[in-house]
Length: 212
Length: 232
Image (cartoon, rainbow over all chains, first blue to last red):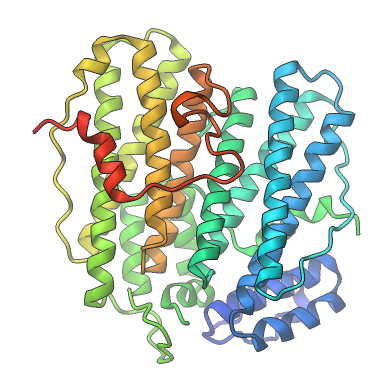
């Protein structure tokens, strides 16, 4: 049994045995620790391992963080990016509104499951709003990251209801990505099978956008 | 709940690499086989035994339901792949950019056909036969009708995968279905935008037709909707 790949090197001594879902969550939680600060991970680990069904809450909070990030991103883009066409603004507004609805739905679901919704981090998007081109490129990256994050996490979801919600949201993220890609003259569906990313890879990818 | 697939992926870096390579795109057919063979199919609840890897057979009950869904998806992908193939052969699409998009979508659908065929076989089943189709009515009406129909069919495909996903027992097959689901959604959004439809358009169509939360469709409704394209 090999130890899992962890973002924080000092944690590599931890052997993760074949706990499947729990192992998945544990690794993600440790990655979250590496992203948000090591101390913050401890209560999550305890919670993830102690609670039956608590894993869905962890996944939902992971998704919530991504949706908070996207919502803030589009909100700020509407204010800060110069040179957006009327169509660009219309698309950005639709995306912002969709993401905000995802935030509300995920927050409500987490509460319903007895969990505590993740707090909104302070985000930063250095360089992203300097031009239309720069903005669309980052939007493309964020939406594709969102798709791969949901697709990667969904098989670990325990509740059928939560899985249904995740599927319903990820389809919309994929549509967002395709629409942004069209505007950028990029292929809307660059591969036949969309990527599925592990939580730690996603958290690493969004780390530059998290100020604190 | 345990899941030998995720366990395998979590514990075996080479297996994980193969899996994500597959999900990432290239070599889908062989990779689906690899994933299913490497992971085993046992995702029975509370299976605490150390059965990671090695198994290639799935348990009967799970298998039958998943096979049915895989063959249902395969039928839809056959329809889509054939439609784009005939559209491209007809020479009706003159616009170079639209033609390129149609070709890339056709290739995606064919990869889905190949992967689902391999998956049905891995499950020990018989892949669904390619249905006899009739698209000439649509194709003869020209590019606008062709693209509108394509946009409708892709919205249907995305809704079909979303509606079926919850019934999939095997985590490997669920992961594969999800990775196809979002590609159908991408096709749908792009084509609906291309034909000039708004986010929400008439008849339940559009590039984001259900708003922030996509709706799934059940198998009966989907099969009924594609009936006009099936020659009896």
